[in-house]
Amino acid sequence: MLDQIHTVLGFDFGTKKTGVATGQRITATAAPLAPIAMRDGIPDWQIIERLLNQWQPHAVLVGLPLNMDDSESDICYLARKFARRIEGRFKVKVLMVDERLTSRAARELLTEIGDRRKGKLPSLDSTAAVLMVEGWLAQPDSGLMP
Image (cartoon, rainbow, N blue to C red):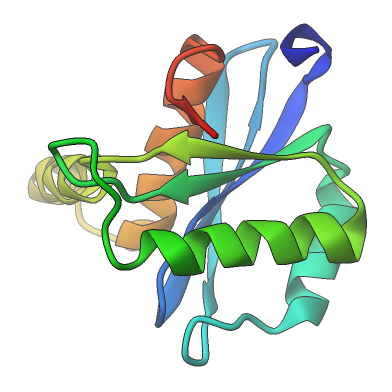
């Protein structure tokens, strides 16, 4: 089943902004897209629909922000709800992926890149989504959450 997934759209869920990245298996790389503004954890569903129509992913990855002890954080409930709504509205396969530490790693990466060059960097949220997608592409069986 997982070997039939070639392109994915990843969401690093947040209540104010949700990072977005697209990834594909051939090169196991992802690229950041513009983050989506959220209103109390709810996106503009037309933006989600446009992204799905544009990228035609075989699956959608939604990050699950677990605590370091594997327990679920308060935001996990909202991330799962977001995932269920995408699956229900758009009839696309949605996988929950452990995204612990992606925001920290994204912050460190953007700081390092920013120190070396001037110019516009991708958003922290979408960079975290890139790291989540690339992690999943590298090991699709690991990090999947029920």
